[in-house]
Amino acid sequence: MKKILVIQNKRIGDVLIASLIASNIKTVFPESEIHYFVYDYTSGVIENHDCIDKIIQINEKQLKKIPNLIKTTWQLSREKYDIIFDPYAKFQSRFICLFSGAKIRVGFKKKQKDPILPFYTHNVNFLKEKSHICGKSIQDRVHLVSSAFPLKNPIYEPKIYLDKSEKMQSELKVFKKPIIMFGILGSTPQKSMPSTYVIELIDHMTSKYDINILFNYSPHQKSEAQKIYDGCKHKNAIIFDIYEDSIRGFITLMNECFLLVSNEGGAVHIAKALKKPTFTIFSPYVLKSSWASFEDGMFHDSIHLLDEKPELFSTNRSNLKKIEENPQYLYHQLTPKLILNKMNPFLKYHLPNEKTNLS
Image (cartoon, rainbow, N blue to C red):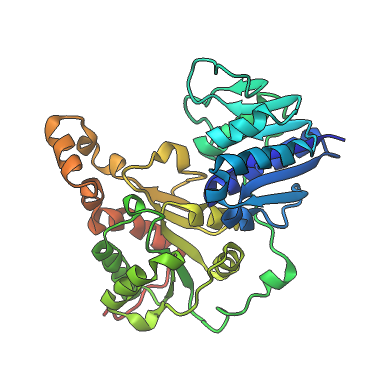
């Protein structure tokens, strides 16, 4: 029996996508034992996964301390893994691979030239471009497995596994209207729309459709979320007080929602894994080609400023100066009007019953 470790010390969406490594390698070695080494705040997206036997959690700040990294590496080496996959290839994960004792170590090259130290037995290049609707980031993770082991029928769709109690989540069942989860803030300022734009989008949706909107944001963003709520016209249509501060809690809430509208981030990947329709608003600073997955213009759709106004991404001196003086310059160009031109057909497709008396 093969013992396999996947190291994915990154954010929630990355961990969920990396669960495909387990799904795919399990088809090669059905009797294998698969462990995942992840940051503690991300483990919720892979709980109950039927291909993952053990989740090893660690605090992100602690792992970055050299003594803790050495201790963790020694502890992992005692597990005597046969195979290690390292889809992120950062210093800590490379260090663990190098001293793991695993005979097969598969990881991505950060640069085209070969690394000086033998971190991996299989140095895999990132794909140059996507060739599957799943998107490049997902395809790269599947490619990481297929570069070392033959895959007859690759699995491209991440899944989230809910237990019975999570499926019975009833906190939102008292609401009779369709509930739209709205990711009002990105994980960083560079991934977040201006708050005035968010308010305008919410006001449009609550004016046009008979719905409830559930805000999604991180615990540390509550004061910013409150300001957005205070600025909205139709507060009676907004669910502000129901909130979960854990990943599993968020998953149970998302599972009760009709669809998701959100800044790009982990919430989008979770919604897609739960088979919920999504409309994603990409930060101009994020590559859509890498992170847009399963987009067909109907069930999943998105908008990116590059598609709407490519001239703004010119490297001429004027553009570069504007971006340097105001890091949010590009995001301010992705106006509510542009977003609604793309989002309205998506909403109409999924929410055909518009209000008769618009207010």
